[in-house]
Length: 259
Ligand code: MG
Image 1 (cartoon, rainbow, N blue to C red):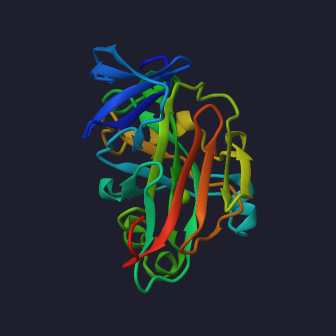
Image 2: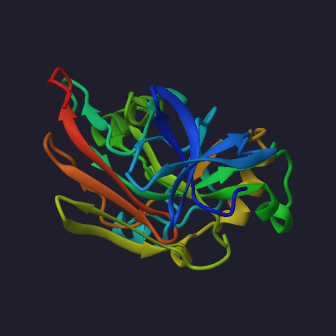
């Protein structure tokens, strides 16, 4: 893992990995999951950001904050409830969350995303940090009406654009309390900490990798704290994770001209 925050950017019309340092932006040559080196300096102007990784899958966790379970009047789960969000739902910073035509209530969910750095299978909780590239912000956008109607979450959480990720992958200590929150149109909606997690990050990596192999770039999205709520076309939604930064997206309706 590069020690500087890892980004993906549009560089002369092609996606490239990049680093941001106090002196400015730099291309990353090579493989951020393997052999790499700092490449050409790009100056200080902010480039167009893309989703920082291309996961083969996002493994998301339902109901993983004590304070959120209390808000929902639900008992604490005995083991993690996991579901998949498809790679095709991923969008980067600044891209539009598109509310599908005919959708009911579509919610934001601020989550800490754990980006996997190397192939992980049957990982012991004590070794879990060795498989983490870093953390990122995830917005687990959810169609609440479909989530209630369907037995499982594939449709409610799988629409194109329902997985904003970014702005970067930052190296973080997975054992410390990490602040996570959201704002809609500048108003704070969620503010909590991974100290409220029912199943901490180490436990999640062990649990998920007993089921499926995680590949470099895959993301475990660790669940959302209290304060989820609906989005409407025109809204700006910000997900903030301490040590990572802020992921900003706006909301449009299906069929609306893109901006
Ligand atoms: Mg969620």
